Length: 218
Ligand code: DX5
Ligand code: ZN
Image: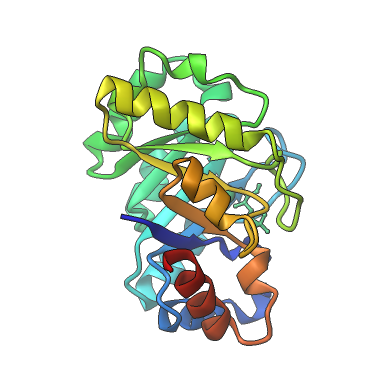
C-alpha cells in the first residue's frame, strides 16, 4: 500500500488552514509535520501547538517528524496534541528501544529516521520494533532541496533487509521528491512518500496533490 503524505513545511503559514483543506481535497493520506529545534537542524519550524490547532479543525493522519535533539522530552506533548505517528532520528537516540516504547505506550505509531549519511547498520537490532523507517533523501532542515541520488541504493538495501528478515515496517522517504523521481524511489522499495515543495508550491494545491497521487499510483 503506497501512501502520499505531504509536508506542510513549504506551505504559506499565513494560509495554512487553506493549504491543509486543499491537501485533504486532493486525496492526501495524511499531513507530515516537520518539527525543527535549531539544534539538530539549522532551522526552527513548528511545535505541538501547531499540531493541536490543525487536529482541532481537520481529522487527518498527523505524521510528526521530530528533527530535534531531545525527542524523549516532547513525545508526551505531541501525543496530547493529536499526533498519530512520531518519528525520531537515530542520530540523537541514546536508548532507541526505550524511546520507541514510550511512543507506542502513548498509542502512536513509532518511526525511526536516518540522515543520508547514517548507515543502515544502526538499525540492525532495533528495526523490528519500528512501525516505519524514514530514510532522509536530503540533509534535513529545509524544504525544496535536491534529492540525493545515492539514496536509491540505500532504499533498495533497506527493502532487501526488510524482505530477507520478514519485517513489515513501512519505508518512508522524505526530501526532494518530485513527480520525476517518485517512481524510482517506489521501485527501490519506498511505500510512504513525503513531498513538500512539489505540491505546496503549486498555485492549485488540491489539483497538485491529486495529480501527484494519480502519477504515483499509475
Ligand atoms: C526536510 C523535511 C522534509 C521537507 C520535504 O528537513 O524533513 O519533510 O520539508 O520538502 P521537499 O519535498 O520540498 O524536499
Ligand atoms: Zn520531514
